[in-house]
Image (cartoon, rainbow, N blue to C red; front, top):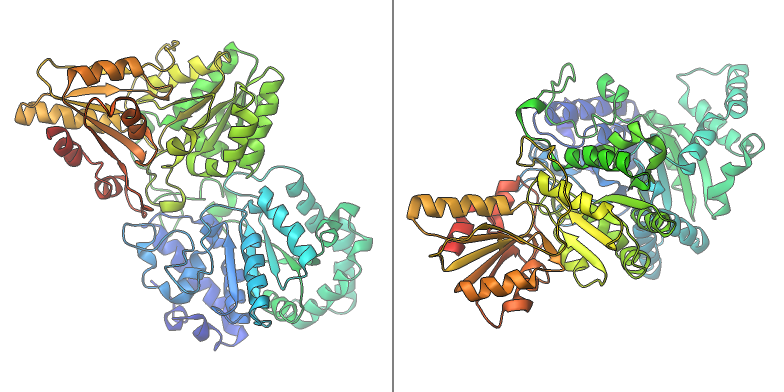
Length: 627
């Protein structure tokens, strides 16, 4: 249910009609609406709760949509969607045909740039500011809201370096909540803590305020002292606090990101200053919801919860279902590391999501979270491998796209024994096109010296990890999906498998069609083949190829001589993927029908909905196999 003030806000122009004194009530109503909605329509909760005051203040001060705001990471932008004309659609967020969970340019004129990944906002607004200058639009403002760990990404620093030197009219707002999806790591996190917690600076600020008879309600006087102190704080801050100013930015802050009136006042003053500016605000992820404030990692995307108490609503108990691939990875890498002291684990800021947190807890000196920095993660892994270690670098498939050059140049070219585990491969569901891991096979298949494979189940994942861990067969890529595996007895004995060899699952004598699969989607193909047999008495051969590179040419030749047609099935793009690899080998001998993700960006929705849209559901597979 929306509040009394929120009901009147259909665009930021309505927001700007309010007196400043009403903004805190609006903030409370927006925050309540987010909690109330996401309790039954799951989405990114804690991050958006932390940016409500900032979002209201930004749209209050700046003339959006003419002024441009880019949110980075985009899951901080739920309140932005609510006050930019999408309030009534908000319950559809992340559902098929509904609102995207991230800013999306073709969804609203207020979404200045799409930001499903991270660390891109400063580059984007610098480009926008440069374009505005070239077009003579010198009064337009360009704001990058960067937080939730995004500043740890290398592109953010590349953009800061460029923007500071360019003198462009750019305002960077650093939303410092000390955390991304997992706890923020690295020197930048410690540096920001120094800025916001300098005892000498904060003690001086408090003494000056009290001696002046400061009244907590007098926001104008408090804002004056904040600006006064910003001119002398260099005397009290550690020398390392000059980073942003050294890059050419005028630095302001840190200020309380949950004080709406102070934010409005400061932003109004910053609006009058030209050139590169950086405002450092300190916020709390999960603000306004005690359980989310205390445990922002669990409440980053908590699923369904009780809107009144905040308690998460339990789904099926873990004991009643197979482990996820992610959990199998987490348990298996620990087993392997206990057997082999050279094995280490690396992830770019996703230890909980990919289950490397298990190894981090048990072997903290052999598991590394390097921040939101996929390029660094891969080359760091290559450096480890160059000195005799066997690194397992776990990255979400769609995030891996940013490290393609490092895979080519630093890993494959040098034949280093790096094992890249691509989590969230295939269609991922409600996160949508920015997160679908559908390009990995087509991108990586042309790269020499890579072994590329995908398990059909958790047993196969363990066997592949075990084989790759030997470290004597070069560079590996193992891809697997988000979600459940298929075996309740996942903890099978691990065994070495033959590299580049597929598995025969069904090979009936009378079949004329062979279905060839790669990865977990082979389980849908198995369902389709079994239904054809039981319901229509149609026999179909089924093969789990396991490896895309090297592909099992011996098995393919045998299949081509045994059947009249081949159907390939993959949960990646058709162009250049697994089906293309099969076609290259035997397309001159036998007709090959390729099934996979079509040549367009797939929207968000449930996995079954998206599989049906792509023609990868059981009924579609049956129709293709039936011929």
